[in-house]
Image (cartoon, rainbow, N blue to C red):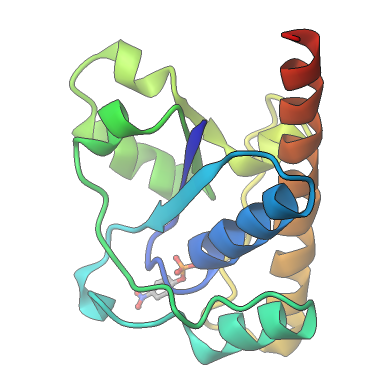
Length: 158
Ligand code: 4NP
């Protein structure tokens, strides 16, 4: 299973989501390939925002080695599931889609906990450490749910 997390900058929300989901999958030996990317070129190749690194660190997760990259059309082929953080990310991904089939893989991350609501993960970039903690908690809840449902479907297939 391959999962891609997408936000605008790929320096706050999606790298947090990548690190958190990978950590939860590792905890339960779930084979999962996780990556993240964004649409904004300004931070190309750089590490996540220090505040994103710090909030993950306080929860025992190291995302300092991640590097920013852009979404590319081949991501539709490579990944089984593509999670976006908000409606702008959804539109950005949709603009790159070659067919409606590409968009079948795309979902709002928080829909895994509140289905069909398209609730956004708030962008903490212009916020403070409380905003980063809030974002972390929302992402963490969703990632725990993803791992739970993947384990359930893995067991059902046995
Ligand atoms: P992210 O936050 O999408 O959660 O990574 C942002 C980080 C940087 C910018 C926008 C959003 N930016 O425009 O520089």
